[in-house]
Image (cartoon, rainbow, N blue to C red; front, side):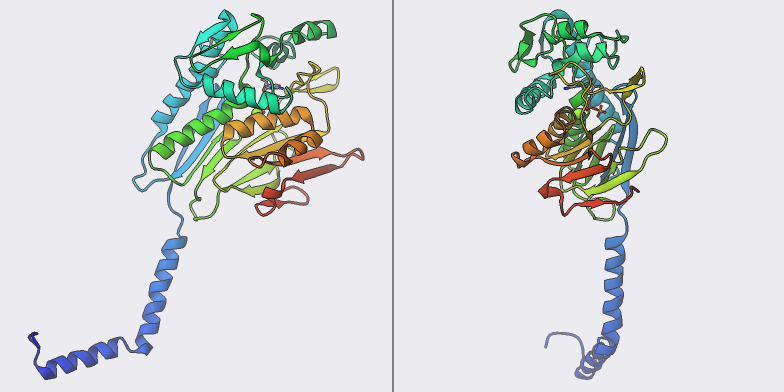
Length: 360
Ligand code: ADP
Ligand code: MG
């Protein structure tokens, strides 16, 4: 033996150790260790929470876990601001406004090309229900920057001649139109695209658990403060600005969700409610039994575009698209002929959806 203990010290030490680690003592000790581990595992991890506004008055809400509690708000605000310089038709010198005015635009920012590509894809899949060239009709119905023209059917017919996205051409460097009257409006996808930009930025900073929401459109990765999936509530279509309740919740599995509904954004003319989603096939605000469409997809721009398309197409055609596109899931709420409300949840949502009987 090469230690400094005498034999008797050695054996005394051994018996003290035995005593200390006897089963009687070990069990409570183990229990305490387990309790400490459970306590720390269940203790909510502090989140960084950022709240602000973009696209004028639209609120954003961002949460993420970061050991160093870094504040990325200045960078996020600047990304969203530059993004607005590309896609906001409310900014007179944005790239989209220049396209609308000058018939052509060269891309200086990396945002118009992806949204044009996605628009072309969803325009095709939705048979024109999703159509960002709907801008002149949106204005005519009073939902855009221009004052409402209170359109009659002659005006609608004349505007419909050029509310066609296939009159827009583009490549990765610029866009141009084959009819100079065409104007684009990306309101139906911009929030989703903005959500994805913020998500990509935070992921590039090493953030893994994150929830990004802009004006109700969401993308989430990883888990919340309790180590559980992030959960979103789906508004009951009977909600209004003052009284809001949820009809369901869905937990998100590294995915995005966008909802289009007609509870908030509509005008009433001569007692008739007109929603802000225009059916490009008729030139009139979409009129069908669908009340709300929530679309789930890996990225929020795709979800956002389809949510708008589904409000135009109605629940039956929407369902057919969802069931033939494995990358999409949807939760649809619609009214039935007997005046009740019914819902549809695609297969992939079954385990993640909790439906409340009477709202919540
Ligand atoms: P929300 O802004 O409530 O989430 P949407 O994402 O459905 O709603 O976007 C609606 C906006 O999109 C309208 O205000 C209008 O500017 C534009 N829009 C209306 N109809 C269409 C359509 N058929 N295709 C593409 N954009 C549309
Ligand atoms: Mg949309």
